[in-house]
Image (cartoon, rainbow, N blue to C red):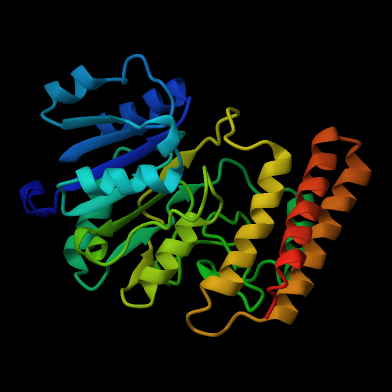
Length: 315
């Protein structure tokens, strides 16, 4: 085992919004790491009365930076960019505020960076709390038919949809990927000399992590590292209403099609095919569940599609 002093220094950036209990759990798991970070940076879009565990971090020799943003400057990408500007570590980690890290998460991640100098970004260690149900397996097969998902984690499809690293139907393997995302990912400091999170994603946008990491992957090497494990509890205190979330999902897919087609692989036909499948899935779930939330999701999906049609921007 290499001396901990040889490992790169870690800056952990957490963007948070009205989740004080979840944030406390996340920071407690950071303080329990076998290798301590250089600093914890909490960027607050809400109004924390007392940033959690500041004194505990200080006792462990960990720098703790708390940034409260103004209401007019809210948004996840702006929070992450503010964290980047404040960070002084060698590796910058971005965590959701509703995660809990395994105690060796940092040690494993930093050792991997130390031993693999060609890797500039990593993610993909999220633990799924339960095995996929039969319905999840059926919906996965449905998604493959409609080009909404595939069999290679961390890669985009011709439809501009993608196979997420957190997909419970597939095993995550150590290896190169096109994008990172989910509850945790990290990059070497030099990546941010030429890249920042796009602030075109208003509020708490969906897909901003994929968009950023996909841009980075065009010039840097990104890897999935399933050995750096964490739990993602997906707080019930959601940032999006179901209508808004469904609409944002549609618009973010369209953003990839029209703005992120760097490698000229995304295709308008497959996008329309996948979007048809996505809308049909939402309608089926609405009809079999009799849930008002599913009605809102269908409304949001249609609103997103109509917004795209008004723009007339499907290549």
